[in-house]
Amino acid sequence: MPEPEVTVVASDVATARRLLGVVQPGTPTRAVLLGDAGDAAGLPAGRVVLAPGLAGQDPAAVGPGVAALVAGAGAVLLDSTQPGRDLAGWLSATADLPLVWQVDALRRTPDGGIEVERAVMGGSHRLTQRVPPGQPVIVLARPLPVEVEPGRPVVERSALSSGPSALEIVPLDPAAGGASRLAGARVVVSVGRGIGGRDQLGRYQRLADVTGAALGASRAAVDSGWLPFSHQVGQTGATVAPDLYLAFGISGAVQHLAGMRASKRVVAVNTDPDAPISRLADLVIVADAGAVADELLRRLEEGR
Ligand SMILES: Cc1cc2nc3c(=O)[nH]c(=O)nc-3n(C[C@H](O)[C@H](O)[C@H](O)COP(=O)(O)OP(=O)(O)OC[C@H]3O[C@@H](n4cnc5c(N)ncnc54)[C@H](O)[C@@H]3O)c2cc1C
Image (cartoon, rainbow, N blue to C red):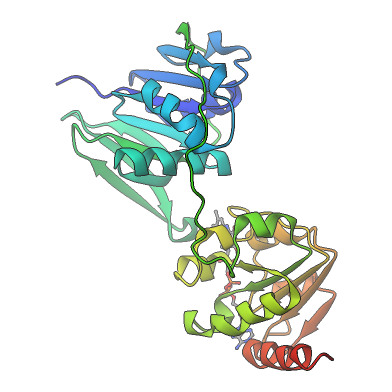
């Protein structure tokens, strides 16, 4: 059985090197570099394909070219930035391939399959997943800092270029907004585990509508399935810098603060006066999140 080749797809050499560090040494590897090649000749891969014509962030425009370049790979690794996630999602959806994420180690199994290790449950546990031989897989990697020896790859150049985008963007929930609205939002209404459940979301959604805010969320709310990942604020989600950040039922873990500490004003609603977010907030309202949201809504809707 032929050994599965692992192909990393990256927009620059440094990212490609980090992604290659996820792969067990000795595994046949290929790197596809989109955009600026930099110093590709020292990458620790067997082959490097330079594809400057495939630079760009629209997955539907660059996806067909990338799919042609990674054809035949046992695993395709991309990094967990927004463009990497978008391209991984596109490749997975169009070729109907499984997608695994948060992977920080990948190796071959003796039977020719692939095994990945990933952090789960907020990083507190590790999960090993096996992909059977013959099943290609798309992998979103979360590289750990590892030193990789330079290599002497065969470097080729691809003439493939991006085409017109055939992507029709259909918002899952237009009123709720997502990453695109979060990025430039002047007001963010953000919800955490403390709101109590998905069935409580309505009032915060309405509050966001009334104030023209984007709806954000903590990872706990996203992991609980209350909102899609595109709403997550923090280290592994969106970074926001609004004029006003309203945090309902969010404790203020350091990973959450990493994504919103540039907010000009922070108002936190929390039943715990000592929640860590109170150290950053300009105003802490010690009360039930739902009650405060309802009162705020009532006043706003009355035009006060
Ligand atoms: C590698 C890694 C990356 C991570 N990345 C992110 C990230 O990008 N974004 C992120 O948010 N987290 C991230 N986390 C998770 C983070 O550590 C926290 O677990 C998470 O932010 C907690 O979410 P929370 O504040 O909603 O929940 P909790 O910490 O459970 O806090 C809930 C809060 O609600 C309050 N509360 C309870 N009831 C009420 C009520 N009725 N009214 C008002 N308040 C109430 C509680 O007092 C508490 O302060 C990451 C973790 C790891 C390990």
